[in-house]
Length: 373
Image (cartoon, rainbow, N blue to C red):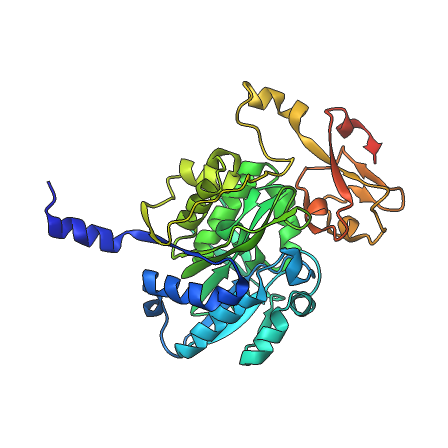
């Protein structure tokens, strides 16, 4: 039986998830100051450290569209770091577009200029090997490996392939651009892709994960869903604890989020305590149409009946060819307006990066046998 001092020590050493209600981005600095204080995270960084701040810069979309980490959150993080004597840089590998261009449209470039923070592009990849996990070799951006520590800044959004994109998924941006397509081809199954993301996250090992949930996205995210206002900022030194708590807080079954499911099955979610504001999400959180089913018996047998396949909307398509360019299996032909379902691996990259919401879904096991709109 443990005594009071032992229990107190255990609590102090427990992983913490800090929550701060934040209904407006104008209140970001106050919310983050409270979170930093609750977690005691200033001790994670030494004066003069080179800290890489890694936001979600999916594509060139303005802040009001809730696709990227909001510049106000980036501003608050950078200002706190600089006040602490840290030397921050900011970087990401967008799914579509060049880093600087995406940062400019997303409002992040002006924040970096304000503080004299350099934006780095993840152009050079370095092989990294590990003896742990399922996937043991990655090509990671050199700037990620050269940083003294990483601060991960995900956005609270749904995701067509992973159901939700939070801390674990956000570290996929540490992979050099061309290598991402290879991973979609190599890890085709949802759970296999989730295992890859988990193994990569463990290699990147962010010192701190800060979630922008002031405004987010549900429905068919991560770029064309419904804008919502959860009104929170949350953080933890553990991406697994942060994701687990946020998923449950918005009322989602972790079993339909592949990264959460595999983290549970692999016993990677630590015991954690929740600090800060008492927060309750009062809205209905809508999952993407592609979310896996957990309530249907014989799910594996029925998967071919229930899988949603991407389709091109004739009325919305502008023939920008973004989807065609980024399809990892070259299944899309914009000239013909078709998707070859014999090649399609349902990674939904096309839907993720389409700037015009021109990728819809269809459910048909016969779709794989023909080309169709």
